[in-house]
Amino acid sequence: INARGQTQFDCFESRLRMDMLGPKYKNFTIEGLIEVDFEIFFVGVRNLTHLRHAYLKIGYGNSTITLGQTWHPLVLVESSNINYNGSTPFDFYARSPQVRFSYKMKNNIEIVTAATME
Image (tube, rainbow, N blue to C red):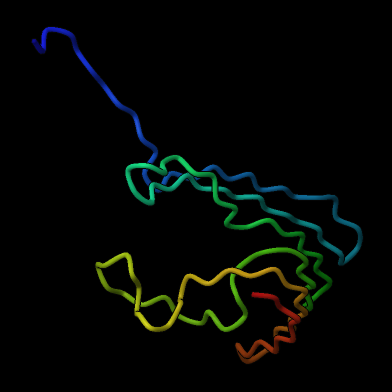
C-alpha cells in the first residue's frame, strides 16, 4: 500500500536578506536592508512570506535618519530564554514602520526621536 516514496519541504523560520551600501560623500553614508522570512503558522497555512525589515538609513557623523520598517525604538534588550515567545507580555521582537532620528553622544548615550505606526 505504501510502496511509493513521499517527501515534503517546508521553510520553517527561514530568512532571505539583502543588505545595500550606497555611495559615501564626505561624512554622509547611505545604507539599506530588505529582509523577508517564510513562516509556518499551522498546517493549512505554510511558507507565508512575511516582511521583517525594509529601510533606508542616512548617516552624517553621529546622527542617522532611518526611514522604513525596522526594530521598534523601544526594543532595548532581547531576553535570553529558550522559548520563541520571548518575554511575554513584552514584545521584544516588535518591528514597525517609522521615521527615526538618532544621535550618538560620546559617553555611549543615544538620543532617539521617532514617529512610528503599529
